[in-house]
Amino acid sequence: MTTPANEGRQRRILLIVLFLNAALFVGLGIGGLVADSSALLANAVDNASDAAVYLISFLAVGRSPGWKRGAARTSGILLLAFAVGVLFDVGRRWLTGTEPVGPTMMGMALVAAVINLICLLLLRRLHGDDVNMRAAETFSLNDFASNGGILVAGGLVMWLRQPWPDLVVGVLVALLAIKGGVEILRDAANEKSEKDPSE
Image (cartoon, rainbow, N blue to C red; front, side, top):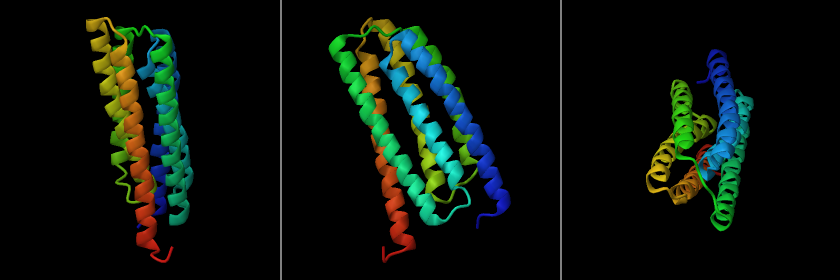
């Protein structure tokens, strides 16, 4: 059972990961523009949507199960919307051309991976037992996996002197976001049916 002390702890940790993701959005966004990297920009937008989701999760702490399910559904929809935007950006870059900078991609990916690992470890310490906290953990896990993909893409861009690894990882980040969004929406729907079979 959730206690006021546990709720206070959840709020503190969610605020920390919210600010870390907002900082990553700024840093990765600047890095993506400088490096002309679709993957970095995709990760930046992902972190912006994550910050919004952590804000929603923060507001959901201590609320009713129905409110939390609604917050989780909003999180899932935001993640799907982000994925569609990334796919459009990748398509635009494929058509107009791009020249990503491998070393910048790798450096930013390493910094982001460390920060996202910290976020993931903080969230796992909460042992979240509701759909809203599980959604928050899904976001950080997706981010950490995306950082690994960008690191590999940066190395391939340097080695092959071709932009396609950056575009491929941009698509993979979007597909990972789609998978996460669908899982969050399914989790929210399943929890609703378990708690209220009549709905």
